Length: 230
Length: 230
DNA sequence: ACAAAAGTGTTTGGAATACACCCATGC
DNA sequence: GCATGGGTGTATTCCAAACACTTTTGT
Image 1: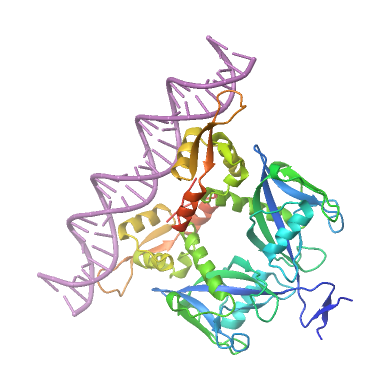
Image 2 (image 1 turned 60 degrees about the vertical axis):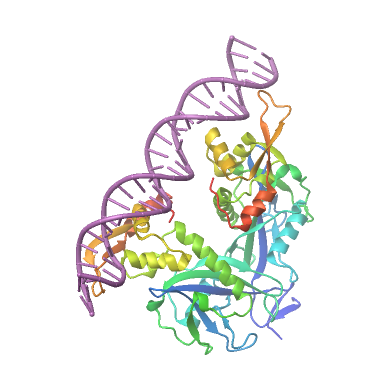
């Protein structure tokens, strides 16, 4: 029997991480294949049980690293899923987090429980274990609203990037197309982009100009509670 | 010793409810005074431990009812607070919910643990137990963004209400003043308000016109994923 | 020269803001 | 009649959307 005893029953507490990765062309989702029951062989989000000496956010980061090798990401709390029957093993509630990363920054490793980690294109995600289909829908919808008023996308590109690259990123996340000229105008009006003299090398056709994200301006504006909308 | 034993230690799971109540003039917060340790005598949000056969949302509603007599409200998940040291009794994580109610709809009852429940004006809230000061800040900030693009305010008024009443509601929540004419124009442009022929009786000075929230129009618009912004 | 992508600016419509006058009611 | 709040409309400003031509580069 278990060694940890309580006066009242307690649910288990887990975390799940929805990791969106941009590869320069598409938005991908990071999944791991389950090695054991339940849902053996099915794909699911990385995550696991929370330890007693860590917050759920710390637990989510730890599990993410253990299972996929992904480290040093800013994760943000998404939602807590607590349906009584969401896990066939018993009463398990899960605090879900999400993050955006540049997928080229990480070489996926096999996790410590030999689960395979793999990137899936957003529109090629298979049916997932547990209630993870729902978690994905919630995460994607949150991401879409978030990126319209917070500059969370710049982390996904190289330090120096071109306007078409940035536009492609917004289009992949939002699933819509922008007019090239209006997009550029809107983005520049935020004041958060620093145009460089340099142009991107090695492209076919005309070389596009490079930009950088202006971190100093961002801090300045954040301090005053700024707003923008793409 | 406790009767419920597990292989690994588990944190306790609680809920907290941040209830915003509008009394026609001010936004109030519903608090209960703690009858026992820790934080005995301090004020805190209604809430409590989640049962094994209920979701956190169900648990939050149940505790809210038991402690304050408030029933039949739409609560929305706010955030999950999980800092390791947030509760002196041990490892307790709390899923916080928030809701908006019309305070005149409820006669506050003393809770089953003899705790007193009381409405506090937003700017007269005392220092709270646990991390509830932080929870309140998060809740108020969430409410402010939410009300700008969701018609959550209409529930707080009588079925028939006047434009100045609605404006006062928005102003109390957001803490800003609107121009009377522009406010009315913006609200009417959403198409969600049905002007009635009736006027409000018993007011001093000129009798203001009454409006109703157009639920049918709302469903119609929701279905198409509409947007508005106040 | 031509095909493909990048760069740039103007026009137009609609929404948000600022703003002023008249109306109803109680005292 | 005057003080108080309620009702309404218009001019202006600003932002967003639509839109076309020129430049660069590789073949």
